[in-house]
Length: 597
Ligand code: F6R
Image 1 (cartoon, rainbow, N blue to C red):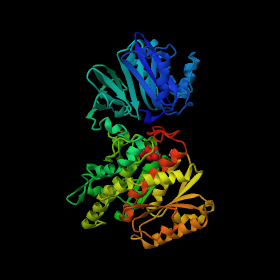
Image 2: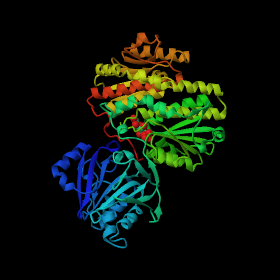
Image 3: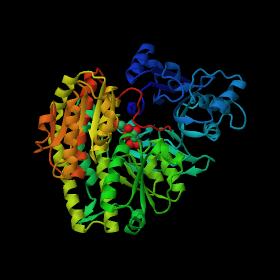
Image 4: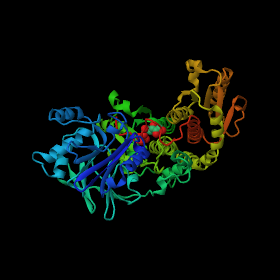
């Protein structure tokens, strides 16, 4: 589970009336060292909880690592999310003489649990005590409780953050994601909001917060362990870049039947899609960049105005959405808190929300009116690659479905666009060969201080995505601009040897756009920049102005981002290595699934 956070890690084991804990700041390897130090036999037992942390409250140091122990040493907890009323609870505990040893919001849950178990109405009752504690918490949390007096069970709860049960034979699991237990069982159960679950080796019981019985949704996991492993590559990210042809192909599969685009969603009938008068896209990071491309595609094909907003800004701005608005929420993980809150806000305003998501059973699709799954498979590398391309493909499916419903494209035009889209996986394949060229460029550039990315039209979101990849992997300042904006300011940044990546639109598309960007390349070259030009095969006009030229297969203008992004992913990965950042799967300060706002 390290991809969810790797600031610190820890485990607690309940056995023979006591709870033993090992924890350490840093990656999992540090925890392994710690366990060796104290002796693995000290952590023997058959009931345990573990955690990998992404710091929210409190620095990434040993004391703030989970599990946290209660004042009497009998309760251990791990927590994902944020307990919003922790300050009041902490003050209350301190008034009662409890000494808190960490800076986290999470630790209060351990002490509250011990108090509930030791005193008052719920004394001696593990489950009732857990229910009492959870009912006092505000915010988002997945909490697991372990108690020394009950070494045969774990009590857990969730609100707005993920928790799944893995059902084994004579063994049971809990995890924020199926990857936690996929090695042991393929049978899983999804929990509802505000559920408490009790597991022992033989089974599970799900409760509502009032203690009444609840039920979960059982499902069988169709990912195998191998899919979640590196498959011969030196990093998950490299493996995932190479899986992009399959990610796009699998995402498109089944969405065009007898020449008609199919969304698979009852709630998004042709009547509804016909009735919408605007589209709003909400997403974060790379998913947001894929959303920018949704805007180009939907406006071009369906002639409906599309607005796009970073999800964390959306609900605080009072956006104008109503029952005739289609909101598209794009998220690989389906757990991003900012996007989830945007979905909730959109729904509260009467809009219908379509999730574009890569993770089955996650929160965003569950709270949306419908979902279009991207079938990229598990994305473990923190920097999004294959999920991004799959999102772009899925967004294009939505664009075509709206165009079909509104009749803004004739069926044969839709078929033609679909055929171009279906050719994309085969055109990504040769681009995977550009890895070597990108490695050479990266080696030549070395550890550079800054880099610019320029694009026009659909090349602009690609430029933004290329800059984001470089920032997060190589820790280098990078910016993406629409090439036409250069002359309005950014051109002042150009100086000798500054590397600039230029994504060149096809000369077979809008000809003025192509010739304008060729002029832009000349302008920056004249000022000393080193140009890395990404252009389609046969575009000879750019040759004199490129220090390096990366070729991509020809396709239509709107499809080009699905190709042009690939070399930028390689470039970022290789430049990161030149800068000494070997672990490109886990860039510093980041987490794969950002479940806090
Ligand atoms: C960048 C990256 C992030 C995510 C963003 C949204 O490489 O991975 O910017 O795209 O945090 O995550 P999801 O798609 O899970 O909502």
